[in-house]
Every structure is written in structure tokens, then in C-alpha cells.
Image 1 (cartoon, rainbow, N blue to C red):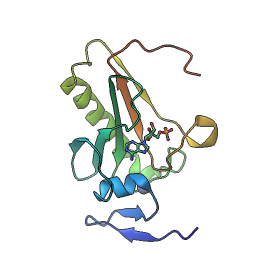
Image 2 (cartoon, helix red, strand yellow):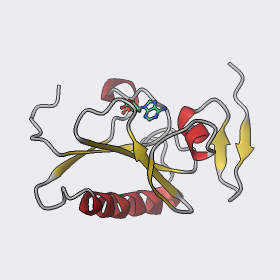
Image 3 (cartoon, rainbow, N blue to C red):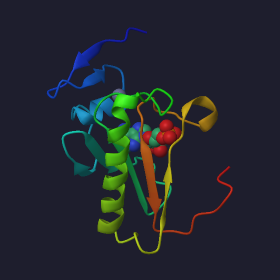
Image 4 (tube, rainbow, N blue to C red):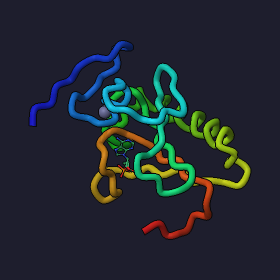
Length: 128
Ligand code: AMP
Ligand code: ZN
């Protein structure tokens, strides 16, 4: 497979065959619930809960293992955004779940770092 690295408007690295990079570039539609210079949040296409939002860095980072020290602040910012979305959705007080599936054994299916915000129903443990 041919992978081409291109640069977005902010100089952020994109991967040409990555569906989440395509959502960042608005080449694939998504129901965006939050956006700023570095982060995008949109509804999951196959929601597993009444609230199921994916929060991603706009920069293509494949997964948490691949996250460079220099990009750690993006994750801090993502968690701040998650708190704000949870408040907007009215689930901050009752509670919610944040999930990051990392690589094969973690069950990751899209190779662009993302955090699932799940809420609006009772969550269970173990997750399976
Ligand atoms: P993961 O299994 O943690 O890699 O999660 C990937 C998530 O991306 C799944 O919950 C999918 O339903 C979701 N997903 C895949 N394609 C799209 C898309 N085009 N728009 C929104 N969500 C998507
Ligand atoms: Zn990507």
C-alpha cells in the first residue's frame, strides 16, 4: 500500500489513507461536536451508547504507543475537551467512560489516536 505524507494547513502531518485524517480534512462527513486548532470531536458512526463521541488530535498520531513526548500536551488538551463535551451533553455529573484502544490486542481498528467518550447509560465491567 502506498502511504503519502502530506501537510495540513497548520503544518500538521496527515496520512493520505487514514479515515480520521479525511474527517479532519472534511473529505469524509462526520457530525462534529467540537473543533479547535489541534483537536476534533465527532459522533461515532456506530454508537455504543446514547453519547458516543470520538476525540482525536488533528495531527496524525497512530496510537498511544507512538505518541511522542513532544505531543503529550495534545492528550492533556483532549482530556480537557472531553470534560467540556461531557458537560455539554449533560453526563458529567452522572458519569461516563473514556476508552482508548491501543494497537492489536487493545482492539484498535482505526490507526489514528482517538479517545471514545461513552455515556448516557450504565457502563459495566469487565469490558470484554
Ligand atoms: P477503535 O476500535 O477504538 O479503533 O474505534 C474506532 C471507532 O471508529 C469505532 O467505534 C467506529 O465505529 C468508528 N468509526 C469508524 N469509521 C468512522 C467514521 N467514518 N465516522 C465516525 N466514526 C467512525
Ligand atoms: Zn490520521
